[in-house]
Length: 309
Ligand SMILES: Nc1ncnc2c1ncn2[C@@H]1O[C@H](COP(=O)(O)OP(=O)(O)OP(=O)(O)O)[C@@H](O)[C@H]1O
Ligand SMILES: [Mg+2]
Image (tube, rainbow, N blue to C red; front, side, top):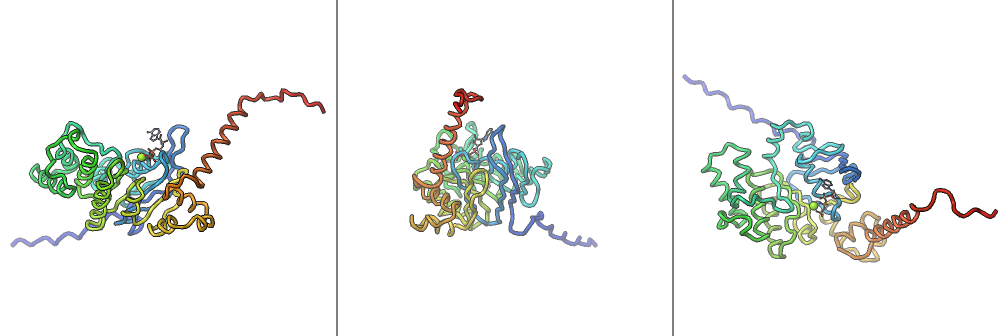
């Protein structure tokens, strides 16, 4: 008689430093040559949340995303993805990690020579052993989820910017990821298409329990999708807080704003898109100081005017 083997014990999910944290960024320094982009940044992303990352152009948002997915190596500091230090993970571990997240790049980054369906199928072909008929089925489901099933055979050059973003999103969904990284998902889209992308992000997060890390400059979008928001400034997290707290700062009157701490006044100017405030004041001061330094530089080392006394 065949004795059935006992079912194997369910294996525990890869250990995370604490139950809620799926990404932990610790004292992250990123330098490109002489330029310091991230200067000791700390950040935690919790399972199931949508975290919106904001900050001025060039402040390092895309760089932070690329570091989080292990595409580039930090100058210093640690990044743990699902509890694993990605700096020490070998190729096999990295491949296993890559199956657990999807990315929608700033430019959608579709392969021009492949149809939309082939673009979506690519991660499944590269990172799984699924048979072709199952891949076809999965591709149809992902394209349906983003409203592109009827355009499966078109090429990227034949579809609009909004459709490209959706196709990029379908590809990010290919492996049913636990985390999706979005780099400016609604930039350059008309308001309705942008709102549709927001709804897609909300649906994915709330219905499927996906964790979303979204870089965006679109404030309507940020306030629609975020559970928490973080503003990067000078290579660090200036403020990380729930959406409600950001909403409170956004709606303070000018008189109330004068009483806010400096960091909150910076956040306020940014999220309101005000032309005047601490960000622009700081810029003016900095460039004035630079100008003065520029004037001082050519001065001779020794005084050319001999003191009379
Ligand atoms: N590979 C690289 N080599 C050198 N410098 C780089 C590299 N990648 C990014 N940088 C620099 O790092 C800084 C941050 O770039 P990043 O693309 O992360 O900014 P961002 O916050 O995403 O800006 P945007 O809002 O315009 O997309 C920029 O000054 C950029 O020139
Ligand atoms: Mg960017």
